[in-house]
Length: 251
Image 1: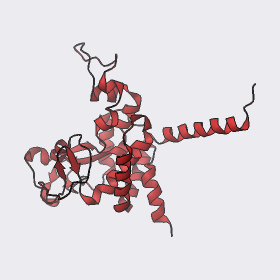
Image 2 (image 1 turned 90 degrees about the vertical axis):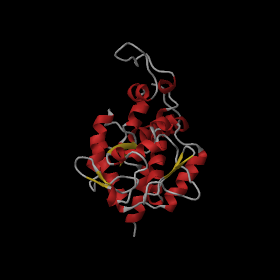
Image 3 (image 1 turned 135 degrees about the vertical axis):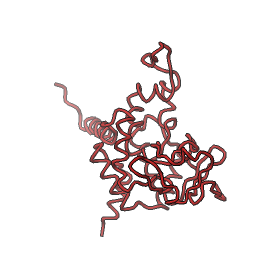
Image 4 (image 1 turned 120 degrees about the vertical axis):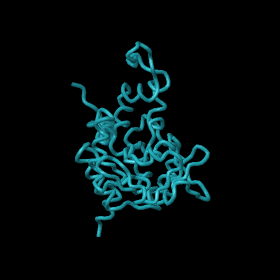
């Protein structure tokens, strides 16, 4: 057997450990959106929506008065909970071949090929892991989930909310969430970018903005507890949150 020289061995081991760290930081548990949606409700024990902090009941009906949310247009959809990809599906998987071109396996029941979200989330393995990653999913007001669409988060000057007390702003195909969840959002984006580098989720400008948001809106005890719950169900931590939580525990 040929022996590796020490520098070569060190390089090989470092590459192997790096690959292991990436793999260990991914979702290997949830294979479908239907299964992971149940887990979202399981980790949200306070029954509150992510962006606007509205309470909802066991039937997923939202008490809009509990948070002062004012429906913009769709009252029926505003009153129900939907599961939101904080990092939108297109941001996760829009650069994959399956999203852009399709895949031989992406054939519907009528024999017609399809591409886009469904094809990528079903037949691109990295996208499938990311799409069903519990760290990236939160309960949200249905109307807000629809209005936000796949718009990127940005800072929009002169916030004027059309959703009552929920200061979620959508203008010019951009979304600006309430200040008190910007840090939560940032740490989700940074985690997803680190865990799935092949998907090229963030560019340098976005990374800088999210690091800024994370610094300005610090991690909370509740966020740390949710990270532990997700680890118990999915087997991996959001390492960005975990590092910040260790600082809270330090004397």
